[in-house]
Length: 124
Image (cartoon, rainbow, N blue to C red; front, side):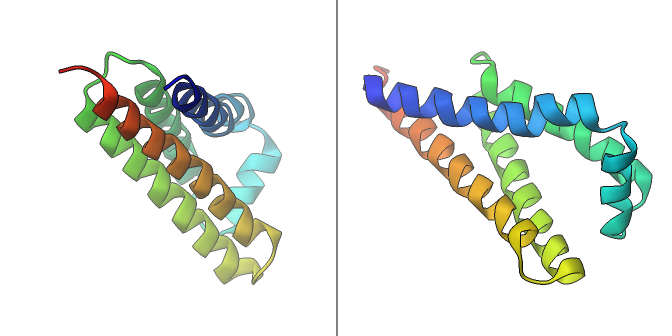
């Protein structure tokens, strides 16, 4: 049980840092804006994406959110990683930037799996 809790918090914290904290502090930079333009998306898409990423991270980290809401946050991040991979593959071809989001998808899956195992182990 302790190992499962550690896996959950480490993977969830990595997602929160990578998807919430870093974008919150870097989304206004010219490099981030150019990255969004490079993929063919309008600038406002990047702003909306960052807002939803921050909200999703808060939902995953704060224990008081209902399980159903957390499910939607996990689904949102899964779509984010899948479509980031597809976008990079379509624009730049097969390479690091097309694979990198899939690595984060695996980390998200570990968080999701441990979240459900922890909830199943809790007394009703």
